[in-house]
Amino acid sequence: MQLEKDISSGNVSHAYLLWGPGHIGKYTVAKKLASILQCENNFCGVCPTCLQIRKGSHIDTMEFENNHEALKIEHVREIISRCNMSPQGKYKVVILQSIGRMTIEAANALLKTLEEPPSKTIFIMTTSNIREVLPTILSRSRIVRFHLFPHDFLTQMLKKKYLNIDDEKIDQAARLSLGRAGFAIDLMEQPEKFADYLKLYKDISYLLETDNIVERFSYVENILDDEKRDDGASNIRTDDFLNVMTHVLRTRMIELASKKGVDVRALIDMIAKVQDASSSLKKNVNARLLLENLMLN
Image (tube, rainbow, N blue to C red; front, side, top):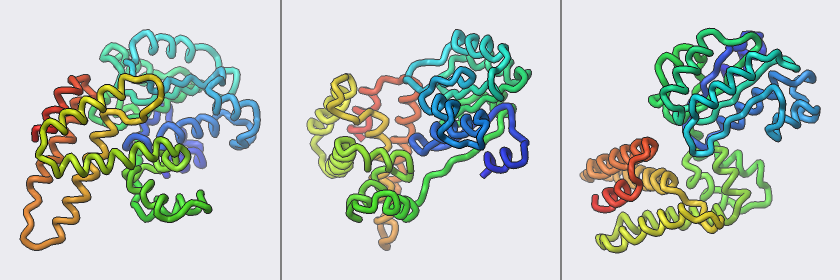
């Protein structure tokens, strides 16, 4: 992996962009990279530095985790101010999760810093959609690509990690994770979340079969209502619904494509519509309109 080569060779870049699907482990890798860079004991995992980074309290490691709000120019000014101070440890490390949420002003301010980075400062950024990142930021970053894992790889990984769990549940978690190792582990360790996603998969399969528009619209209403709740009763978000719908459609397309004389163009068209809806959702297009439009189709 690129990161391992850079660390072993001492050729560490001043800026990394970790690019890949959501819940695949980019932020976890970013935190581990910060620990490797900052730890005086070869990433021991137990020293004060490693423990502080794990808790998000290390003085020279700034973390901006995705809180689903915009990263504004005020945040970048704070970063620049702190980076211009001499580090108490080995580096100043800045972790920026989901940089596609940056405003244009913030992105331009960050670009200036990447062009002339302060001494001993390393930026570790993540994104699920590289098209949301300014090309000029891309050109000044070392890009590390993360890929979805094959189903067989995930099931074997989960079996090794969860020795006492039956194969059927492991297979379901691997399928529901859509190739994202971090998300598969979340499902295995959070039974309520696992149940929510299993129900979502079954619900979407049913919605694709029924012609009842009232039922479809009612389901959209339930998703939007659940998303507004803050009592933790549901883990499902609109983007989760769209991701699982894409997976259900792709599974059906693969199954039908193996049969002679079956036309899968309608499924291909529907997958494209769901992906367009996912992109629009990230641009703050009204979620209700997006979902209702999909239900009509």
